[in-house]
Length: 334
Image (cartoon, rainbow, N blue to C red; front, top):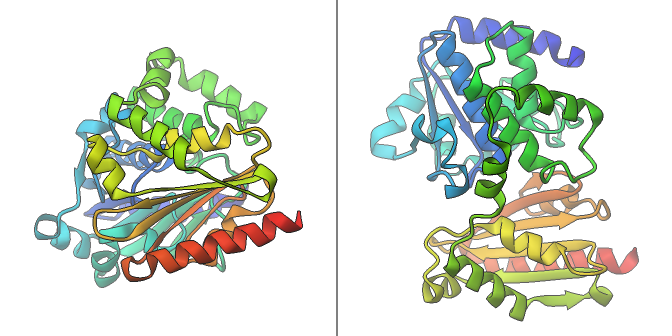
């Protein structure tokens, strides 16, 4: 990543002089966020840095196989606020807007740390942090972390290889999406030599739905909304669904996979009610329209193919209607 070489040097200088580093990812961390945070945390540990990895919520059970599952903490204000506000460096991975930090946003903004953003999403301006390492052409944020580690001649052990592989495999849909390049496959071949059990990893990530989750997928299939001649489909997962079916750990990816499997579907929107009344939104497309542009209209962001946002509790239903209407208009014009 020649374009980021100078930024990599700046990050190395910053981290080498830091007494305390906090690394985190976006709220409801997906595989890329998890992998990027995990790889950077391990790199800093190997470099004898005082580093803490914080997430806003427990890891999805899909990633329980990772070494990182024993290496992170779930943010709690009474336990971690002083750690965040007093850190020398605060690194956020796989997000380009402060709002996607969830409960870590306020303490991070209130602290005195030098902030760093590592991300591959399109971003307005120079980025949200004091030091931004942004490349929207990169396959995954975990790839950017890997390139940084190699740039500074850092060690790549099994834990780092596993973490970067999780980033790459999930953000390429297990190497099915258009961002799967020859360069990516070459890197994957190198990473897989670190004693990675690829079939077991695939089963854990993509074939580990609980029976209640399977029933939820069926419920969503019965209530899916089809518009624009089937090119746009959307669904809402209500908290009542989850409670009635006994879904303890909800996962959006299996539901999104179901919706995207429809013949002729080009755009998918999934709205999920959260326990606190907010609504999480996941958007997917085949490239047209640009999901990042749609999400940014509602305070979120992402990629052309995949993006998301979170609606505030008091406006969730209105925003949902507005977003559906916007996508309907856009798809209707294509």
